[in-house]
Image 1 (cartoon, rainbow, N blue to C red):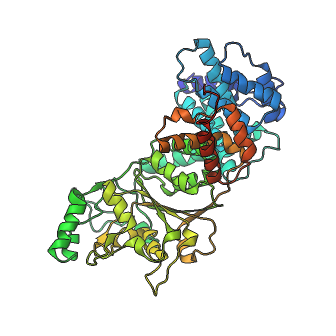
Image 2: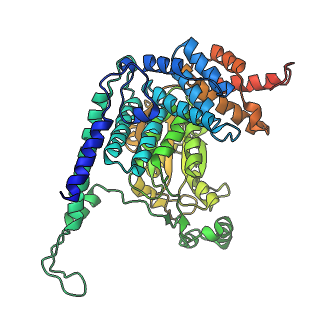
Amino acid sequence: MTDDHRRAQRARASDLALAPPANTLYPATVDQLRLGWPLVWNNAFMDAGQWVATLERKGLPADVRACLDAIRHGGVTLPAALTLVQACERHVYDRDLAVEVYDAVEEIAARARFIAAWLGDYASSCIVMHACDVASISEPDEAKKRALSVTASEFSYYAHQQALGLYRTDVPVHRKNARDTGWLDLCARAEVVEFMRGVDANPPLGAVRDDTSHDPRDEDFDRAERVVADLLDEERPATAGAIVFPRGILDSIGKGENRKEVERALGKRLGALLPGVAVPEDWNAWEAELNAEAPWLAPVTRALRASQGGRSHWGHAAILTVGPAGAGKSRHAGRIAAVSGLPFGRYALDTTSDNALGGTSIRWSSSHHGFVEGLLSSSGLSTALACYDEADKAGGSRTSGGHPYDILHGLLERSTASAWRSPYYLHDLNLGHVVHVLTANSTDPIPSSLLDRMTVVRVDEPGPEHLGLLAPALARQACRELGLDERWGDLDREELSVLQDAWRGGSVRRLQRMVARLLRARDSAPVARH
């Protein structure tokens, strides 16, 4: 018997031993769920209810017990499951917990993530997918590795459905069907990998080649691809940096005072290769972190990730986020920049009535550089995230000062942005590595020629189920703005209940005002915080 035969026998035996049952009357453990075990009666609500009812609570932290009691007596809901996850994760670094209690809390957190994923939470689906992916990498047993990989693919399928708004929580969770789909997806990917391995192992050979270099008589195998790429203006992968402000600027701006002003303003950035910003090493973790903060804006996060393709560093992108007022669109753009390490700037288009967005000539007394140019010159990087608020409310006229849309037409097209003729510097600048995110309530006033340059993403406003995520984050933000310790922003159960009664979803700005009033009310409250 060859080694391959022994390996196959071991895999079949392990696969048979790991095969999940068709049905179960008892809630599965986290390890069993990762291997594909079904839910109790294929129902996420019933499965979660039975799991909570059978849990041993002795020794658990008080807040974890309170969350479990809330689910047991108040019913299984997505906010309750997410609150339980957050309560458990707060104890991850609690070294005072006994080992067995710590393990129990960790198990509860992981199990609650599964529940939240099946109840429609996109971030939880991503986290479960990532956990199974990581576990499969280090798993030596090949049958178990396959089971974990299929589970990761299964939850990737759920996440796609949730991101597209197609996921339903009112139908049974038939894991076998989802896992069959996941397995077919893995097989399709494996086929592509195997095919490309063969392509890489057998590169084409030219007809004639000498011993030194390419022979001009060789067939040009890549010519067709190059021609098509040029015709389509196909984007090349973003490099690690770019010369944004070439030294030729000095020859374009005229008199000596202007040269001194440019040299003073740009300093060492003039003619230098400005570094870029590397994309996240783990896109799934990046996406999960952002979606955990604003799951209703998950389509924006996914669109921005897709815009970067296989780049090693952030490159040009143009995204238009369309949704109701107060949905947190601009705030989310700022969080994307912060999590990604990108410089960030906001420009209010609703207060603009000319093309000042692009800057004015340095030869004028009222001269100023453009918005994007200023963002890059102040950061010293070749890339940034530029956010333009209220794109549907921009004003202006070509007969009196111009219109900001005229500037955006050039900035949102990669080819023109890479050789942007700066009104201020009177020279071509390379702004082709900037990520542009525009927000609007409607696309109707925006010209179609501008819409064609962007990926349009439509989002909804947050619902009451997102209060548990939004309120604590807004409270911490309010504390930072007031110069207070962020711990002052910890909201207790009564305060969250007050907010829950007053805010039934909708504008984040409205909720932000409520949270601020609640924090101010603490100063006059007779009851001490504990």
